Length: 296
Image (cartoon, rainbow, N blue to C red):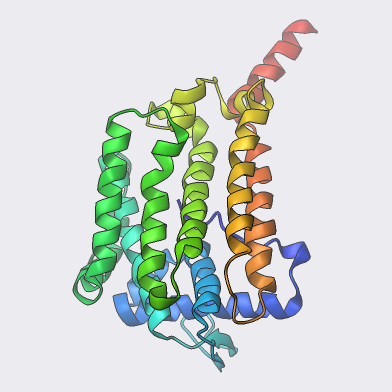
């Protein structure tokens, strides 16, 4: 689930690149304040995106200060100061990482050692921000029910993750939340789930793990799915989400410069989608090579 929301760097202004990196450091510091230093190991670009967009929508100006940290201990660098919104986002990050490794353990993968890094941090989340823990736990439980039912609908499969992000946005934005912000974060949450499922297609196929794309289309591998007769249908799924994102963005008031937010939402998400769609799979490439050798 983590790491798919990125900036489209070639089209990113220098001022926004500096701000994005400062916000990344700010979320990292927020995680440390709420969940302890070990939990910083789980910092993701996805929650940096939440910090960028939610601060702008909430009208909370970000104070940038030059500081050191464990990673940048020699030279000072611009870092966003920690505020309450950053702490909430840091708590969400830790809860999601904890449950990610819990899910890995249930799937038979190695994850027990990694989860220990976030155990104390997650306990702090439940104590300090019980509503965040509830939002994550309840929606991941719904996700588990959907997966056990082997649902082959992309919309139904992605609903729990989308609802989780929408509910968190309502909680974090408070009075600034409205139907358009909720719909925006619902669409983004849905995109995160689906792009992760598509990217994991070959791995899930090999492990016989749940994946709505496999159940809905049954292609032998991701390359045959994204380059075959269903390719346009797959692209339409993501293009419809981009339309929802643009439509809701047009109704949301941004209190500060929105160049960085637009770069992530309107350019970064489509760019990452194209990257995953064009990834192919080693198995199919090997099949092509074998066929070519046999032909020769």
